[in-house]
Figure 1 (cartoon, rainbow, N blue to C red):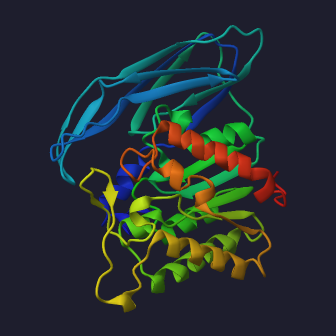
Figure 2 (figure 1 turned 135 degrees about the vertical axis):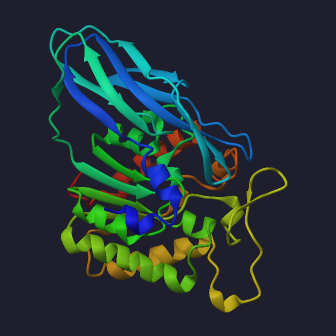
Length: 347
């Protein structure tokens, strides 16, 4: 139902087909699994970029194994125009699991870098749906929550956090998105949740999609929409992690001479209110402080607590962390959890 509301921006549908933090959960004593699927990766003629292999990961307690494939369909783009789709083959990920005398929780993490068609799952023992008893965590964010640069599906930072804190994650981390769209707010509003987190701001600056005049009202509207159906669910508003290009410079993002992201100089029309990340953080902190006087279940986290100026120097493109960087974000999030979220009933 959301498609007509974002069809003007094809990237939304494109990244929404790429699952982040999505998994199948079974109770089973199986020691052999075969997962058959068809992936659709993409490549771009403009810069020669080719999508990473599709990866399936299986986790059981401390056991973790990943298998990747590059034999699926391939969509060929010229800039943002789809030129052709080259048909590929089905992929089969075969796993040998630790022996078990009785059923235990088995999680199958689906590829986070491309869409797939799941065809079949074969096993040497019955697969039973796992009970869902953990607190439900709905997380909304940009590519830095989608984490396509993570080396394996459970390596996206919200998934690392969910596994460590024993949460049932529903991730709406969407690369190139998180521009406070109302269809996203309505989606979050309708999802059962015990905890909601909203990581806001980077793409507002990255794409120069809002100004100082429009950003705060958009955040208010986003929160108002969620609160219509979730009046008491704890909501954590997270401001952007460090991005050196945009700490003091507005967007849109461009490529710098060093190949890393670079910002723009301020334009001559200062009344427009071009946004920087420092402005975004100050706005979100003040907004949450204002609203929390009547909404005691609204909280704020400074994104610099997750990834600061020193850690940002490790980002390969100056904008997105690598796999180790996402693990660092998760570790910092978990470390902040007792102090920042002590009041949350969920925990």
